[in-house]
Image 1 (cartoon, helix red, strand yellow):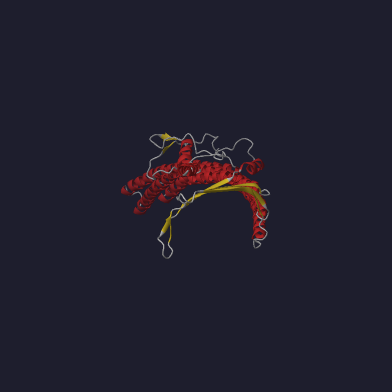
Image 2 (cartoon, rainbow, N blue to C red; image 1 turned 60 degrees about the vertical axis):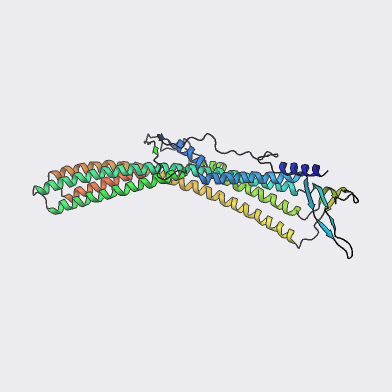
Length: 447
């Protein structure tokens, strides 16, 4: 008998702690699939970078673990529909001595099994399951929102890296322009055509342009480090990313993407909004769950106890009982009433938050759409400015060679040219970033 009880207890403990058992099929979400190697020996595209980030980014992995925990919470709530079984056992060494008698020692032990099955509780369990389903749905949408945000961050880090690289090349070209002006002024000074002031002014501009190159190199390293960090890589990792060019299409929105359509689409697609809608549902279920705490519950119960003191004169005993148990918390210090009120207030709060989220999302789409339209115009104007600045710099240098303008005119023309080059770089990549932010505000993964 003793061996049998020990075996049953061991099996029970093992079964109830099996790792990975999913009796209620709640573990539906899966970790990112199709991950690629992080060996970045060759050139990688933006799509490659996004895939690596989704698989490796620790912040997104933390959001995924939160999602799995909500699935487990749903499974735990469903478990309330099955009976609970408790096994207890004890063994003690008793000693008893009376005056004039020897010590009497006993080694009694007993084991008991009790089972309880909640039959009816006025919707408490169902509301708890519904609440956990809604919270799981909210967490799932929050995970999707985190995924979209990560993709946007990778996209922007990629564009910032390309922008920093283009800026460095632009500053290097400007440095060559300033070097040519300095060499020309130095030659003219040595010939006695211009004063020392011309030579020193040209030299100063040239040296300042060298400083800009050094600063641009630092900006590029910082941008590369930020991109590597999003991929959960060492910031010193060298990432060879594919260049992008303006093909006339990359800067445009999808056909038909007007502001009104985008705003309507955002209300349908944004995962943050769907997460808040699920929170409203969870809060409503919370009211029912709180009310059930003041209502009676009916349970089926069964108990069995086996006891033995290992003495032949006192044989073992077995006690059993089965029946129904009605439990009704008639008074709990008004705590249940306040819990219901709390659940109602939380429900009202979640509804207000939902209304606020809708307004916020519409405003985001509106704002990013205006930023995009402005950046389109800014990019076109910056290209016109660059064309004018290039011609101005070319004419100014030619005039300086023949002595028609002084060094200040030439340096000013070169400065305007350098600014125009940077303006085109900033406008182009700023336009792409604004486009990506607009689609993120709508709720699309990438465009």
